[in-house]
Image (cartoon, rainbow, N blue to C red; front, side):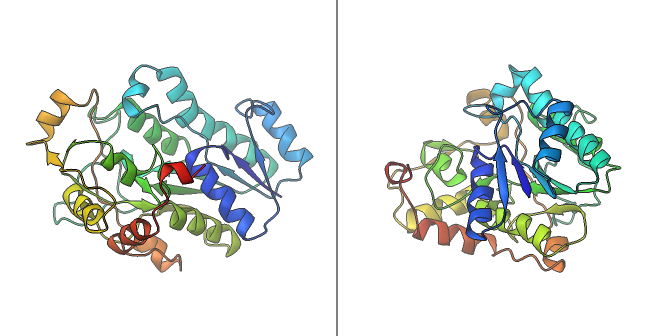
Length: 293
């Protein structure tokens, strides 16, 4: 039995859909049924369900964006740094392997030669550099907590998007703003991400950290041009002069813009469509918000 934590969220819903499509035996455990942040409850639930694997999609991202994490720091720290440690302890004691949905937002920029950061690179957008948002700092702490855990996957998600219109979908977010920051980023097609994570379990891919981003990187301007090309939006977009103007006018906390290297995942046999192809696929299959409920 696979136990899914945070299955009602944006990322968790993609896992639910993937697990259902494969007809795998799983249970989505919600906070309404019991507070799985408490070790005793989590241990009891995993033993009762005879869990063979745990997927953690739970966390705190802030609404409408990470700026909210600067206010709700207790929730952010608990969901993104403390909870992974709790799950690690419980699963470790019970001998249950598990997977943790992390984030690529613990990096900023790219390597000097323009290439992406790999799983062996030390995160550079964290509390240790004192240059990050509270959200990114907590996600980095979550990975530090798991640094010696040999019993889990750390799956790094980076700016998720899909064909379904949603306030959490990167492609939707861009269409809701008239003025944007033109930055270069790695992205994760949410369906590809969930499928690769479940493939890790299904195919017994070696445990460890994986950057699950679609190969390549894109600028905001490139994505906007693809949105316009496919007729998903007719609005005229403009761009901030630079990040300083963006911070002064539109944001309260620094944003991570980074490039990740996904070659380890590809070498492990995980299939990830090139990022521009994945974006075009999503735009061609676009499901407007009114049809997505």
